[in-house]
Length: 564
Image 1 (cartoon, helix red, strand yellow):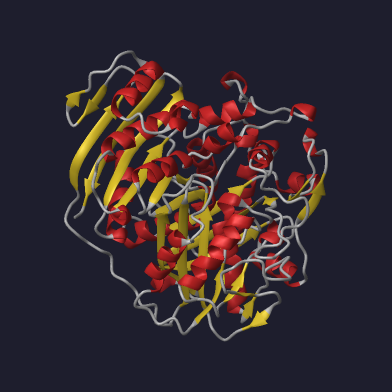
Image 2 (cartoon, one colour; image 1 turned 180 degrees about the vertical axis):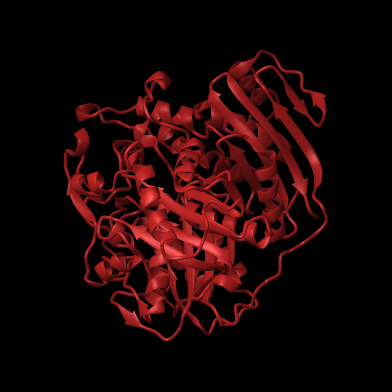
């Protein structure tokens, strides 16, 4: 359990949390009707900053994304007594695609592009942060994942404070990704509404600074859970079972009489909103007011779990439940209470839920300091045992200490290994080199495991992430009439998607998380692994390092560990 010491939201409608709260209460939104924007030949609606706003906020020498992060963190630090230069202060960046709008198809012309970890380190050093940053790339669940990661590391005693910032931008790259899935609305989105047509993309940055509970004056992050549907990499389980499980897991054994509202994911897409409604109803929350902020800001991707939490808590502190923008008439089958207009409340507890590509889900619970939090102790158990280990290099595969006989080297070796040992997923041949590496390494550890799906998890670390898929995606579309992005390529630009692929094939329904570091750091990785095990209780987990910066330059070093 940790305390929230400060927050900030930077969006097209405000540069502070208070400014954004006031704008939403006035009914203002960030959406712009865009046609022919940056050469894109499709009309869409998105929450974008104006050119003038970007120019005013940009920090010299930094990308647009990095500039938003710097501005947001600086504003949040100005409202609390946290020393960024302390070796006990952690920086966690939550981003779905990071600096991808700086990327080019050819590595030698990347310009200012840096991988997520290097970008986070650059920002951290500018802000005076001396510890190594962690980047969370868990698709739309990234913001909640980042908060839970920070909470666990503080609770485990590794840090005193954590600066968590979520940020993403709107660019032709990300527009092409979502256009390839035909999921964007041409008008302002309408979450949970009968007339909803899809989502709006949005950009912004939001920061939550966490510290020990005793330091907080306002809110406590008391619990959070992550899991996986093990259903499909780009579509949620239509039953809502994964979201229901994280909700019930958090609320079990707690007094919920002070629960004021649910800040839902509420994207405005047909499948997400239907699934969420079923999950909330199945979890017994049919009578709890439900809000979604996507019609005000757009879907801010890696930022949404931070931004929407900060906004909802700011509203509850003032006795207000903000409305679900764009909602008029219920259009989902789950019986839930959509907050169509602003309401007042004396209750103060917030439940935040999110879902994302890669089949992952997350939830977090916040209570005001002084209220009974029903704190659950860390599930300290025996030291993890290593059940299996695999190491893959371009020249060899070592499984459980023995060399696996396989022909070829590099990508040819991976293909031969797949045919010899797995051969179970036709999509393997459409995967990028990094995804093939992850799928093989995890699959060989999980094959015929015989374990309960809910007790299985995946926690992976990387440096390059999905860089190869990103470059390939850039080559599938251009401006004008040639704007034909491929969904088969687009899906793997989210580095956690292959984790969802593994989870779906091998029935992994526990926590699945993908993190990026600027370099392989065994001490930091061990801290994250042990604090995750302590928070999740008895679990069997695939964890370790996987990286593929070039097709034939890759490394996987994974273990299957258990605390049972």
